[in-house]
Length: 261
Image (spheres, one colour):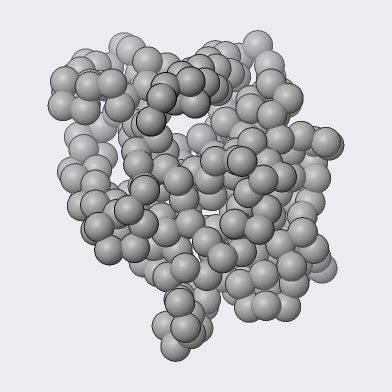
């Protein structure tokens, strides 16, 4: 049975989509079967895999609306290991449309549960907000992966996100856990980056991954070529970091499976 991970942070510009795209590519390179669901109306993860947002093929919006199956929306940029369900700008209206539907908070969970056994990991790239779309992702997920930019304001947003995760856990998804916090956009030359990293590790302890994603121009360039950084420049520091993060997640998963309940 696969694991559904919501990649979430309500603050924009923290490396959330970069983490979704590049972690997926790194896990696929390790020959794990991966599904990425672009659940952000901006569709940046879709662009990051070079998938057009022209509406010619079904998106997650059509799946939510019941106009397509999830499988019918699959696009496979790296067969047989990586599949992507793209987003579309129409998804922005889905929060309003979902309000009057039954089980509006669990629509995504009902969709993904049918495909969970087909993948090792399903990564859901959430929008930079704490609205109904993100709530759907939290209800569908087994765990939440939180990218955290090494800047002061990102720390403030993390507190709010943790409260939302706690509410979702208590009311709608009792098994929801924190997959981990990954520090992103780290600049070792910047004292503030080091200070934020130190404070996050002190407060959250083992929930923070040892791997730190550095500021790297190749990570920024890769989406304009429609590629994860691993496909764009495998030797870059960004590629190496995301491969290390994938290894750390797989190691943690193996330990979790091996630990008696």
